[in-house]
Amino acid sequence: MNFFLKIWQIIAPGRLIVFFRFILAPQSYKVRSKAVLDFYKKLDLQKEPAIIQEGIKFLKYHKYTPLPFKWTLKYEKYLPEVFYSEINQRFYVKFDNKNLYYPKHFTKTQVIWATRSILKEQDQQSPHLYLTEQFQVEQGSIVVDAGVAEGNFALSVVENAKKLYLIECDPEWVATLKVTFEPWKDKVIFVEKFLSDKSDETSISIDDLLEADAHEKYFIKMDIEGYEKKALAGMKKLIAGSDQIKMDICTYHYPDDLTQIESIIKKYGFNWNVSTGYLLFFQLNEEPRFRKALIRAQKS
Image (cartoon, rainbow, N blue to C red; front, side):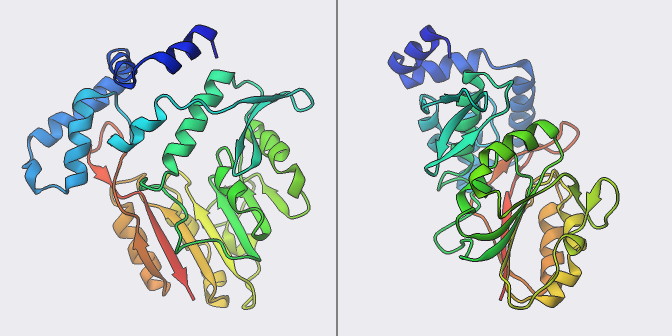
């Protein structure tokens, strides 16, 4: 990070930093903020949940973000310690006391911003929080991480996993994840395909990835850009053959994801709950509403 920028972030008051980021926000952010504010002007805001009322107020004075809430401001000045590996030629940070690497083209500044984003997304108050005190990956579980991204979720559960399947197609991210998970290479399997309802040259279903075993415990995390419903359709054999399955399923990519995914897992016989809070995610041709972020489901 530029030396003067780092000093600015250390000494500048938080409100001043927020103000300048609001003023200098990209035009695309301003378009999104305006769409949300204009949409909710037409509604009776008092009938909306208090958390959405807070989000609307936040957007009036801050740049657009999928998490427009006061608790996120603590990350505005957070400066994670960034290291560089000469051997791997990559920047990395400490995450859960483990080395989390970034692709070679990432600058130190990009690493700082990406790390802030990870921590914000997995904050205890975040609607996108994968694991809670009551919902954990049990020791000895077979874990499937579909939508690996930087690998923070997989890294947080790798010690508990008997086997860890990482579903990732981007060659640059695969190369980086192999560096991150080198200490656990004996139990980490890379699958360079998309997770779907069928298997072919570019896709794979969970039923073709895993063999159902009634004695095994499974944990499946899906954050796959709206393909969650297809992935769920491709795991019927696993569900029929095992009663020890937990899942994190993202529900925000499309407006009807929540209701459709709830319908699917209900038919599969799962118990589930929806994470608290809301995420602000929408395409510009969709209603700019707040959405529920994920479902935690369990069959046991």
